[in-house]
Length: 156
Image (cartoon, rainbow, N blue to C red; front, side):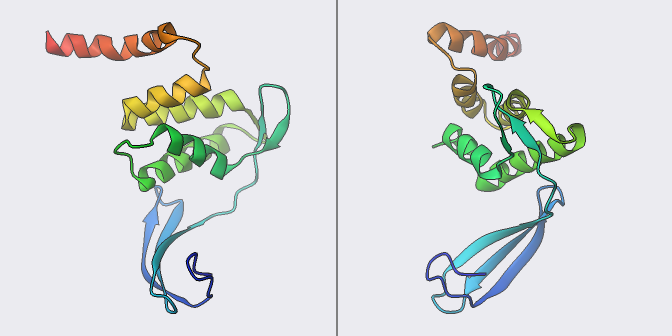
């Protein structure tokens, strides 16, 4: 594994542990040249599910694309990188279990929102605002209303 800092291919594994509900191995590595530490993940290579976009175009499922969208939603929120990786692994596992070869992008977006809502409601609303293309403040209010009603009952 080449070091992301100095690009030398000489490292040692400091720690290995199961990650993402056993579907990956997380390894902490130390570069023997520059002494920087970094994390790598080892996953089973799965058959690629094709994503059917809103315009009908089909493209391979992209782990990095989902991570980028989740990272934007979680910007400056108390959500760790491990939590994001767990969400992505859960989405991938759900897709592998429920869909053979193709899945509509809306299913992926709905799964992402479902998992985000369990971890951080602000990140959930941020993701939903982009995914559902909120047009105005009323769209935010409509999305927040179901989340606020249970809170009011708890306070009463």
